[in-house]
Image 1 (tube, one colour):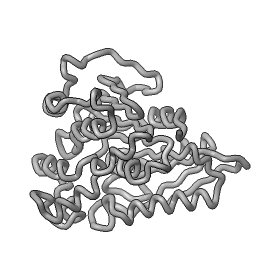
Image 2: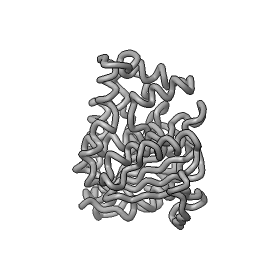
Image 3: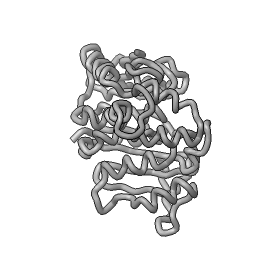
Length: 276
């Protein structure tokens, strides 16, 4: 992993940055995470967790969870971690692991910022087949075959999916963000339905998105007329917010974009969170 500790003799926040689906701990897109940590005197870890999600030992396995938790323990032993301020941030496959970690180890996190995440591998497999993306073979290789029907591969994919655990994470502040035009092609491979359904697992029942609303968001790449409103957030920088909903500790933001992220917005939100 990458590791950084500030030269301060006091407890500091720990940022756990999570690499994306097809990359490892040397991912260039993660440089901005380390730059924030250095500039703000945060402790930083960027664990490898078995590299790209193309094999059974990667892709949300128990080994992966253990790798990240081990990295956190290393940081605690080698730096002064403020345990009320341990944060996870990730984009795409990193957002996927952020949601999975929130459910698998909810007692750790002060905040999880997930951008364009995958929440349900079984559903994403079907979506990836329709789009004819490389992720079909990645999922099959990770879960032991096509995860269809009541098969061992389908059960393995479910076990590795955040939706199997998210209800345990309702006490964790979680910020989910998704571009409305994601899920249309190879370059933008994760439909917004993945985030909207993750929100439903974390939100109060009265705040759930309906299946009709999720379908409209996903198929039309637009906010349903009944939900349209003006939302502004200075922390969000140049990304235009099309829709936002808060319920308990989870926030869902739909922005004008596709498979994108706004790391500065993630940091600003995380910096406000404390573990209760």
